[in-house]
Structure formats: C-alpha cells, structure tokens
Length: 561
Ligand code: TEU
Ligand code: CA
Image (cartoon, rainbow, N blue to C red; front, top):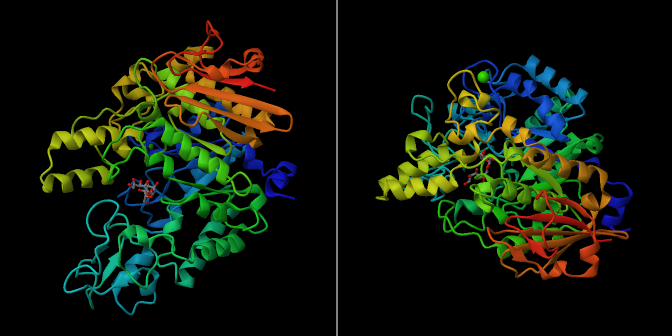
C-alpha cells in the first residue's frame, strides 16, 4: 500500500486542519501597556472560533529580554510577565480546548537568550560544566574564528564582556543576534534538557510545536568555513529529529502536530523530514516560494514572476504527493503582508486577498493563516527609520548607512521587505489604535485601520474577506478532495493565470485565478464540461458575462466532476 493510500485510509487529524498564527505582541492588548498579551488572546477567542480554525500557533510567550521579540528565550518554562502568567496560560489553553481549538507552541531551541541560566553558566569559565552546551571557539589571529555572518548583520561570533568571562577570550557562535547564542546539539545533555522541557509542555496539555529554524540545530562543526548557510543541515539532523520523536512524541503523536521551520530546505530533504514512515516531523515550512522575489539579499526587491511561483509551489505539490506533507503559507511574522506582496493592496485589495487565500487553501497541505490576513491587512507603510522596531531591519539599516548607502533607498527596501510590515497591530475596529490597545501601541498602527478592520470587514457580510476565509476553511473540513486530492498544475507558462485541478476518486475540482488588474479570457474555461460545472466558490458577487472571462483578481473553484 502506498503512503497516499494509507493517508486516505486513515488520514492524520491535521490533514483537513487549518492553522492560525498569533504573534502575541501585536494581536490584542488587555491591560493598556501597548503590548498584546494572553488576556487579549482570550478576549478574541470568539473571532477564532467563528473563523473556524482548528489550531492556533502562538509565537513565543516565554520569559525573554525581547531582543528578537521573544525568539530569545531566557526561561523555557516561564511566561514573560509582558504576556501574563502560567495560570493565565493554563486558563487560555482550557478555553481554547473547550472551543475545540488546539494550541501549538513555538519551540526555539537552536539558540537561547544570552540571559538564559544555561548560557550564563557556560560563559562563566572554560571549565564550567555547561561550557560545552554552547559553541565556543578560539579567535583566529585576534579576530573571529571565521567569517560567518549573523542573519541580523555583523559577525556570527561574539565574546562576552571581560567582567563575565574571566579566564579566557573565546568567541561563542550566534547565527542570529549576539543575544541569541546557539546551543550545541552535539552535547547529549543539551538534547535531554530540551526533550524534558518539551515533555513538560505536552504534559501541560499543548498540542504540538512549531520548531524555529530546526534544520540549524545540526551544524557542520569540524570545518568552520564557507558561509553561515553551510552551518545548517549538518548530517546529524535526521538522527536528532528521530531521537526527539522517540523521546517526546512517541505514544502521543497521533494527537499532536509538528512543523519544522527550515530555511533552505529542498523538496528532496522535505520528503525525508516528513515521510510517514520516518518518524521525524509532520510537515516543514519551506522558503523557496518566499525567496523568488529576493535579489542578492532579501532586501533587494525583485518583481515576482507568477510563472516562477507556480513552478515552485507545483514542484512541492508533486514532490510530496506520495510521501510526506506540505505546509502552505504566503505570510507570517517574518514576511511582508501577502496581499501587498503577491496581490494588490489598493483598488482590488479585497479581490486579491480572497484570490490569494483561495489559491493557497486549494493546494494540498496544511494552510497557515497569519493574523490579520483574514481581513486583508496590508504592509505597514512606514517612511522613517524611527518607525521600525525589528532587530533585523534596524541593524541592516545601520550597517548599510555605514557602508555609504542612501537612506531613501534603504527605506524604500524596508517598505517592501521589513518584517515589521506584518507586525503592526491587528486592526479590530475604526477607533483610535484600531481597538488593539487603550494605551500607546509598541509599534505604529497602520493608518488604514480606519477603513480596514475586523468590524468593517465583517459589515460587508457575504462579500467580506473574513466570510471568504470561513468558506475556505469549512470547504476543507467537508471536502475530501480539498484535503487529500491529487494536484495537477495547468498552463504553467501562462503569465497571469493560476490554474490547477484537484482530484480524488471520481471527483475533480478546477481552480482558476487571474493574477492581474485586467480582465482576461481563459480558454481553458471554454469546454462544455467547464461551462456546465457548478461554481463551488468565487470572489465576485455576480457571475461573469461570459463563463471564460475572469475579472481582475477573480478566482473560481469549479466542481468539474
Ligand atoms: O526565522 C528564521 C529565518 O530564517 C528568517 O525567516 C528570519 O526571520 C530572517 O528574516 C532571515 O532573513 C525564525 C523566526 O521565525 C524569526 O522571527 C526569528 O527572528 C529567527 O528564527 C530567530 O529565532
Ligand atoms: Ca499588554
């Protein structure tokens, strides 16, 4: 029996699930300090339940100095007071479970904060028992051990202040900020400590983990040359993930969901990471399709070619058709807003937002909705460096200015590329600060919140972006062909038409989308079969004058057979 047959016989519970990502500091603030928190999330559970999502993934809420908004953790088993308490967490989890929503935690174990007790000990001296929990090296001729760069600018190696580090001057590795030292996964004590912590959360009732840069945990350490990309995906990665699976998930994996974030992962790697027989992960977040509009760096903005996007996502659909599983996303807290990036955030914003959602949700895999996408939120529109908060953006700007670049050019890049585009507060209503906080928000609210907000979107009733998302989610729940059907890309070379079929048994759906501001004629809709097919879903209120016509950013799902 092939894996796809097995999946159809006994599909995993998450094969028809939809996940919603909450970036807590920007979701809803309950105490007026300007920062979103657990109380805020609790107050918005009706919104999530109404939307119909099955799972919530919470970006980090653990104790943290917040150098990278919580992706720098100083205590894995404590809630940061900014967000609330462990008691409030338990109450939130119970509330979510009683509404049938599962909760996935963010697992950030490639690195800790430099303020984590483990690192404080490790840095204290060369002979500390925790020295080998991190990656320390001697300098090379008075400089860093090698030329690796941090993802957040500057070298990937730092020394701790001499007041702390008394007996030597070694450097520690940090692929991200200096306040995010990388753990040494080659040390079995480190692995055991992480598994113990994961079991503690699962025993508490959480339903799985989204694993931050998990392919970076295995490093090629013998030979520290090349660029820091070559540090990732060391050969032990599969061994570590299988060990984690055996020591954490075994016996309870049927109820859980695991997704590994993996920059640079190929579809061939993903087949191994997610193959049902391999006992590693349920799915991975790949980066291929979100790198297509990057130039030499992510801050070089290229125009996306739809043909490239279709080819890339199509290859992943085919690659993981027999073994493994896809995660599906167009945005998250690290990416610009999807409607601004892949669609149109002006005249056709509602059409583009609903088209993008439909194309994504009709692929095979598990769709992830990023907070605010369900009402078509747009990029931040910041115009001054002072408006930015993100460590990646701020450091890149400073480094580039130092290298002699023009501020205006850099700000233009940030306007399209900065992670802060996705981190402005969720726009709940048209009131001051979009109903996000009664205080001063930690980051600027998008001025378009007076028009684009949950309240006004929902007032559009049937035509709202929110209603469209609801329909997509319930379609996946009710339709086996949406959840499990085979994917076939049509017209791959067409510059503006995104078309594919999904088939299962005798049933076939045809999905067509117009990625442009112009009307177009789609000859593939000109068969008697297509002309007679019932429309399962579309994002225009009225039928087109001619069945082969697609209006700007129109999407249609046809029940072909
Ligand atoms: O991101 C990892 C990552 O590789 C990128 O998406 C990153 O955001 C950066 O933009 C590279 O250019 C994860 C988290 O999602 C991110 O928020 C964290 O900052 C990062 O790991 C470190 O924990
Ligand atoms: Ca708060």
